[in-house]
Image (cartoon, rainbow, N blue to C red; front, side, top):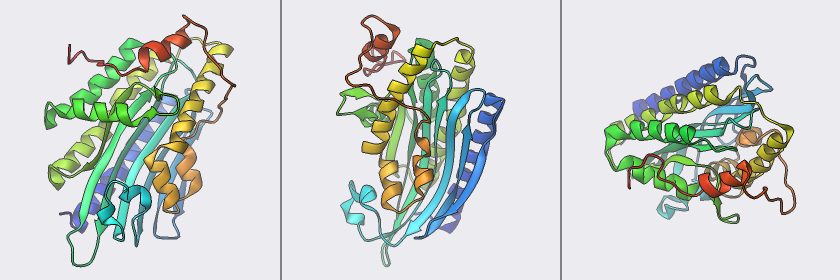
Length: 307
């Protein structure tokens, strides 16, 4: 079970991860810099939100670190574990979303987090969670294969069954039930991870957190100079609407933040700067826009692991 030193080590890693990711994305953007705002939560804890806007590559991006604590677990955290209701908790994590200017560059999301639930006279209950996923607007096979290859390689040292299991969980989680379509092309999603013991589970969290930049930036460099039209930008904004729908209706992290009285601006920093909804809008049959939905969003074995 984790002691105070272990919790401190997780916090140190997460704050360092935020620093490294922000530095890498600033370098890739080449124009804008992250603006930091530190905040405190009235019920306990706080965080630091970093936002980048109107850059050379990024239209808007956010990388947030938070460490909050309280006397009772919120409903979103006990939905799968009702036996933990009433325990005090600590929750910490780094969460990020990048919305690029160019619709040929996908939106990317990553999150790594750690929870501890405690009660006098009982052992603490802890777990790790996180992952990363990719949301393209125009489909490129090599980008999707690269993204999943990095995910696979990060999981490989922990067992051959890890990538397939967490890839499948990601496909299931990032799914808009009311649209009957995936949010993107997936990646990894894991939660409630404690089966390997603290040290090994923490090692896995670090492997996933450290893999994000390696997964995303080569895609950015490959697509950043691709010309795009006003119509393609409009399509990006339609698809961003799906992103907003998922985050506000289904996302556990959003619900957790709102239910724990977190800072609303920091919780909603993942939302894109411009978005549109058109009544019953449909892409032209046979177009690249239609191909995204028909060929890229359905669940696929991107690495050909299961012929």
